[in-house]
Length: 318
Image (cartoon, rainbow, N blue to C red; front, side):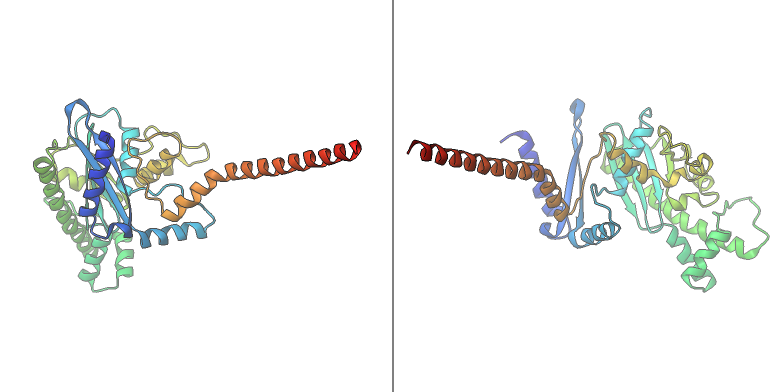
């Protein structure tokens, strides 16, 4: 048995032990990271429930499109980062603040660690709804209209008391996120033998909330900037450059997925549904089946011609 086969068997066993569902109820994939220069090999293992995956694929197929890749958001973000910031050394931390969760991605040249925190934009909205005693939808509108992260300290409050309340609620929620972020950094350094982040990149929809960058600048002692997945990507001519620049921090996963179709990427996981895998396999074999059928028909025609000619020769000789 080769070393690769041994590794596959070990990973398959670990998947059965660590995936919190029966292994036949999930689609899973893995990729090896590192291992060069005597460094330990990391295994990135991802899984998704079959029924959830089929629902997602069904929604895609209803649009008339075909599923070719099912990636994991943090890994698509990882590919976008590696493509655009390959010149960086040391440890970088991506903080992807979405609607429901915040994904942390620690990236070093031969190391990766991801953690998901259940705090995001909807956490701010829910806190605003509680503060004002209003429905979630109304709180979301208030956040979009008046929301920003209070700078605290000696900064003057807004003259509108309701706007001030919204900003304090946002700051309180982000303070919770900061606490989780610091715990994650400690875990990464202590349990994963990682290096401390030398820089932090913000991305995701909620990262665009006013003064979010200033909040993290206040809390952390490393450079903070917005992640730009278009740093090494040339946009098509009709694309509005100013709008792309403003919304670039929202496009990390989109760029990461797009890169999968045009070049090889450092992380190439694929959680394709089994039904789609079977369809793709059938599509690959279809030309062979057509060619085999054509050859069979030609063979029958050849035999028929031969048999007819032989019959004619026999008839002429008798």
